[in-house]
Structure formats: structure tokens, C-alpha cells
Image 1: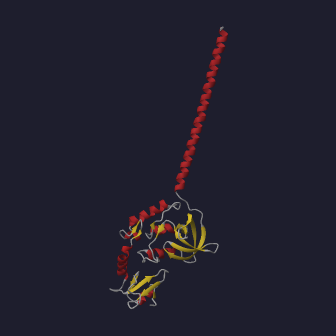
Image 2: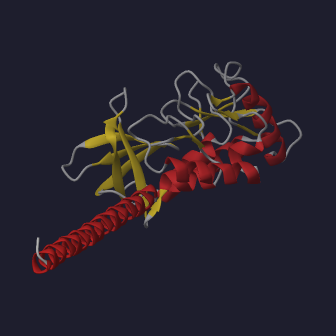
Image 3: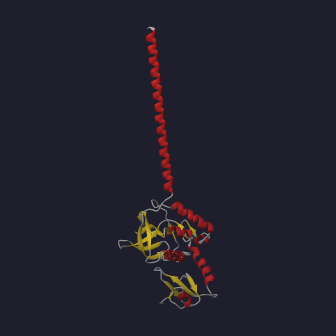
Length: 271
């Protein structure tokens, strides 16, 4: 091999090495770009997940209130004209109209609060759950009045507990539980009675004690004998000692006179 041939071969090898190095650098840049793009996508996904954890109000429709049955159950008229009974999602208020249970502490207060928020004839926004009905055929929903969720307001006042948490209807659960913890901390409403509101419901053994204390504070005489009771239809009826059902009636309120009972919105029992 002559000197010129050797030089030519040497230059050829250097040129190949240079081309390979340029190619490798280019591949590395492409790899880095792909890695950066992947990281951006992951960050974007992470941000999206974080944003979705702060639940926003879903699609709603407007309905008219027919009547409030109790604190967590309402009858509405749909835009179609059909009427539906609706159970407020993820909360439970004490009983006022249960056919086999007495009126429970803070049940009347919860019912009154809901009635004041949503009086008959008023319009509300309704957001149904993913699974729209319970086993009784009632719609399951969140109600909004002036942009505020009624389910949350009942928890804030200590008039309801978080309950009946079943997938897929778990939207807002973290926020609702946070509101409940604050009410527990403040010991307001149902949380003012020790061991009353439990994970399984409301402890009825406290009912009579609390009712007696409440009546003792509100009565103007030392021994009120007229019994005020709210039946399963929501009718407020009072019973006098000579009445047929007096002995078997468990009072929600006690009155000193019949006029006191009438002033509180009760009517006299026909028997």
C-alpha cells in the first residue's frame, strides 16, 4: 500500500467515526426529547388527577318541591310533571315519620331546617347519583339551593351524619366527612348527645332522656301533662290525660295547657 492509499484509508475511517458520533448524539437527543415529553405527559396526568379529586357539581336539573317528608327525604315534581320521592345522598337524619320508631332527638329540627330551605312550591337544583335509585325505588340525589348543597348544610348544622356510602355514589364523600368532623369537634346537634349518632345509626335508648330534658327546659309549669306527638304522616296531634291513646303515646313535646299545644301547631286527638 503506498502512502497516498494509506492516507486515503485513514481519512475514510475518521469520516466514518465522525458520522457514527453525530448519529449517536442525534439519537441521544431524540431519546431525551421523548423522555421529557413522557415526563410532561405524566405531570399533566398527575395534575389532572389532582384536579379531579376536587369534585365539581355535575349536571343538574330544576325541580319543584312538593313537600319535605323529613330531614333527608323529599318529594319533588319533575319538569315532565311526574312526581318522585328523593333520598338525599350520603347523609342520614334522625327519624320523624318512621312507622315503627319514635321521633328521635334532632329529627324535628332536621325536618324543620330542610322545610325552611326548600318550602313547598320552591324550585331546587337536583344532581342525581350515578346509581340513581335505592332499593325502595327512591331517587338518590344532591340538592342545591342558591348554589349551596343541602346535604352539606345539614351536616354543618349537626343535623345529619354521613351514612349509606355505597359505590359508585361516593362523589363528595371526602368533603362531607370533613364537614362532619368539624361538627363533631364543635359538639353541635346530634353530636351534643354522647354516643347518640353512631356508624350504625341513631341510638334510640337516648330518645326519652333527651326529650324529657328538652321538655323540662321549655315547659312553663312544673308538671306538663298534655302529650304532643307527630304521627307517620307528619300530623301534629296532642293527647290529654283522659284521651283513649294517652297512655300509649310517646310525646315529642309536653304542654301545660291545650292552648300551648294549639299555639305550637298541634291539633287535639279525636279520641
